[in-house]
Length: 139
Image 1 (spheres, rainbow, N blue to C red):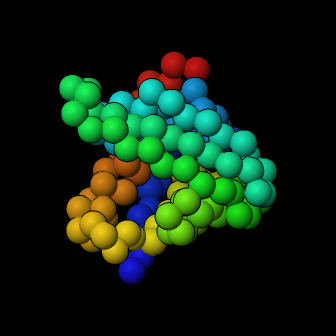
Image 2: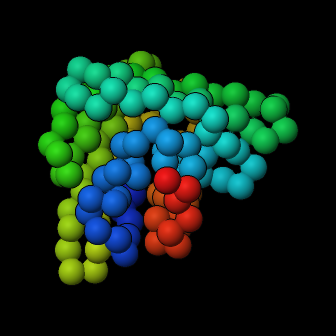
């Protein structure tokens, strides 16, 4: 099962792409929630390159690591990746008159509640949009 989440972001394509692919910026939004942080992000952005993201609860009660390989890239347009558990993600970026449209499709894990995963991905996109549009980036 997979879901697609979309966000229209009032920012130029280059800024949105940079925020999605630059480790120092990814750390600022990749938790998707106020009680989580992303203390580590590594991105080797090329086809066959790897990524690693660690997210943690602020109270230290839970740590999640996400890693995998970039399968396909089109600069400023497309990122396709596989998590190490085999799940696929596809991110599409399109500039328009209102800024940048981002569409993300993620294959859900069969070991976890689909509704919970869908909610997490939706919240991640909402938080990403908020951080970009309110210019809260530290970088």
